[in-house]
Amino acid sequence: MRQVSLPFDSLSRWIPLIAIVTALSACSAGEQSIDSMATEVVDADGASMGSVAFPVSCTEDASTRMRLGLALLHNMTYTEAEAAFRSASEQDPDCALAYWGVAMTYVHPLWPDVPSAALFESGRALLEQARTRGTRTPREEAYVAALEAYYRDAETRDEPARLASYAAAWAQVAADHPDDPEASLFRALSLMATAPGSDQTFATQREAGAIAEQVLTRIPDHPGAHHYTIHAYDFPPLAERALPVARSYGKVAPDNSHALHMTSHIFTRVGLWEESIEYNARAADAALHHPINGATSHHHLHAMDYLAYAHLQRGDDAKAQEVLRHLASLDGPMMDNSVTAYAYAAVPARIALERQRWADAARLESRRPAALSWDNYPHLEAITEFARALGHAHSGNMVAARKSVARLGVLQTQAAALPGAYDWGIQVKIQEVAARAWIAYGEGRTDEAVKLMKDAAALEATTQKNPVTPGEVLPAGELLGDMLIDLKRYDEALAAYRSALERSPNRLNSLYGAGRAAELAADKQTATDYYRQLVAVAPASAGTHPRLDHAGKFLNKS
Image 1 (spheres, one colour):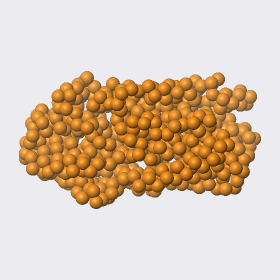
Image 2 (cartoon, helix red, strand yellow):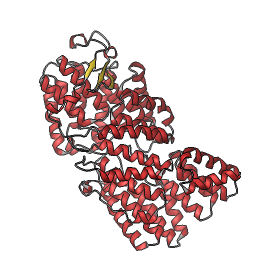
Image 3 (cartoon, helix red, strand yellow):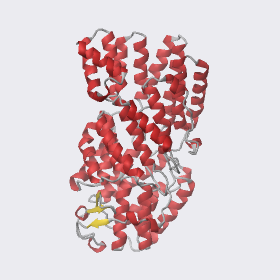
Image 4 (tube, one colour):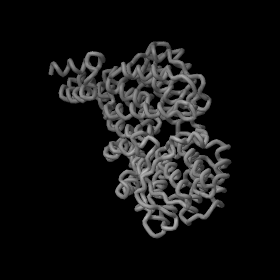
């Protein structure tokens, strides 16, 4: 997404009040470990941003601004980080790493966007300033060289190739400066960005997580170490390892929207919906009160999507609808990027599909709000088309369902051509195959339907969700269970729901489906186990949700 520079005179709220933990000067940088220079950064409201260790060859005032920029960069609040780095360069034009910092904010290794041609040109110009301004230490020159590895010949290479060069360069910087926690963390971030999506052992992510955890032992309140530990372990088999970090990150940066939200990546992975709701509500509020250049922040909308998802898993339809109404009520400009578009596509689709409101799903309108650049987001338009296809298929309107599937085919081709490292084309393909399965099922072609649905679930099992989403809009594994239970193939249905729960623990519909499949198979004990888990996940929704009511009645009879 394009970064918009804030005017320097608008930076007053971001000029930090710094508590100096250790006296810092360029001349002493070689005489003490970088770790020992860890400095706490606080924002203008006195809220902590965590501590970073970042000696730079700049004036004291510019160094203060540089530390703020770095903390914001690690929190992935890129626009604010850019403003802080620019402010440092304005205060001290010979602060070489200030220009490096601005160029760093254009690179979003884990996000679905890539820099525009104009930003690539701007980044190279900034790095030229970084190479020639002031007096640079060998470590600072290594930082500049690492970023140049990404920008070099950028237009002739795709994003995976650029990120591979970036990762190799940061690995070299970290090896040459083993006592530098910031270099280690940028290496960890680049490892995650280049991890092979097909590796179900998550070896690269484990390596990145170990690096971040090691930094935490040295600087316990480092924002980047918290943030990257969460991203490294944001996978079902690893998520439990990040729970302590998730629960502390909100204290390290209690007023930073993205930091607050990031905790919920782990809460979502392990199905802790109450904690996800708490932190996403705080994140949404923090972002709403900190618009970016007068526009509603994408961080606000990102948190609202996760909030709606958590409310649905708690069975709290009323709260999920409140999120939807809130999105519709937002007035004025908003940041036009894929995170914003994802929230607007996903929330209404989730509410309709999670509650089997097929008529509502069929009536969903795509490309809303119209002010967003939907031509750039075919993978997100596909969410609405997928919901429409399922809605029409379940409602018996196969002509309309086929029209939506045809549109999914077009969107899949466009999504596969997107420039980011993440393969959105596969995600749209899963949706398209699942939709075709339910059309076949509605037309009585049962064997074909089951085969297609199994194909979609198998393909889904080879992929990982993108960080922009709390989970698939409707998991293919869960849809397979729904089809099998309707066919009275209860043992197979139970197995499908169990697989879905391994990927997405404590999903309401998967818990219900597993319990219902066991109940219909006369496996009372297994049904009791799953229904107990279900009512524990959503205790406040009894009496308002038919699936929870069914589970409660079953348990009362047991």
